[in-house]
Image (cartoon, rainbow, N blue to C red; front, side):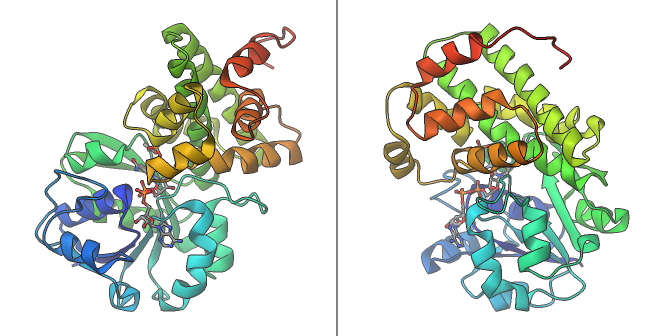
Length: 332
Ligand SMILES: NC(=O)C1=CN([C@@H]2O[C@H](COP(=O)(O)OP(=O)(O)OC[C@H]3O[C@@H](n4cnc5c(N)ncnc54)[C@H](O)[C@@H]3O)[C@@H](O)[C@H]2O)C=CC1
Ligand SMILES: O=C(CO)COP(=O)(O)O
């Protein structure tokens, strides 16, 4: 039986751990707080997935060494900006032949590294063992066993298949892919586009506005992907268009919700204090804008979101600025 450890017991760490347990994997979920670890062992996570019944086989622990001991699959599900510091404590405990999975959808501030790059660097893990799982996977819907597909990406196909086998259920269908760069970029950039779409919604704007932002957001993602060597087909797939649609259209998305609240006039600090969960785009908009600048890629929506998050312009001003840009070809 495959043994898995999940590090991070927020909404997606818990939902993915539950999915693997349903798939027949022996799963231990690490939590920082003893009361949350005990709740998980009792079949609940009231903080992050209230009302959801977790599978009986899923165990919680606060002992990370116990969780990682003899794991075939090690999954990281913490906020992207905390991963490097966490790995400084955890990396030495990861079994040397384990698949190391990133569920995270962010880009590191300062270094502009993707999460697989942070795992390789700070965790000293070879790229052949690093697997990225990403797709239209709103945690609550997966935890409620609503059908969805996802992408399991690794440069080593056998490693991707190991992780796909460990998480496949009748309601969670993983597709393998070897384009780690494209899968990670799709997941990170869609959060920033969802902030912009949320702002449009909060301003009372309608579906044409949202569809325009989503489509031009995809154009920005594709340009960045081309510069970084991603496959165009990946960005047209589940980890690109699929996740962009789910996140931008769903009120379950924290990034979307954050954008709505910004348009209502609340500050980044006020919303962050009340949300209690990570909205990765709020920080990754800065690192993605830096990555784009480094590669000479034009990303006006990402740039506009950065300006709002920094408090330099209002969401209302952002829409006017985007609409007032000089005309160009759709293909550029
Ligand atoms: N929630 C969702 O629907 C999905 C989330 N993701 C991605 O998965 C990643 C994790 O997201 P969620 O589980 O939703 O986040 P969350 O905000 O629900 O939970 C984050 C977890 O990390 C823990 N944590 C926070 N700071 C930490 C630190 N310094 N060290 C160790 N643990 C720490 C928190 O206690 C919590 O258990 C993010 O990158 C997110 O973009 C991906 C797909 C779906
Ligand atoms: O990545 C997600 C769905 O695939 C979840 O998005 P949020 O982090 O905005 O909630």
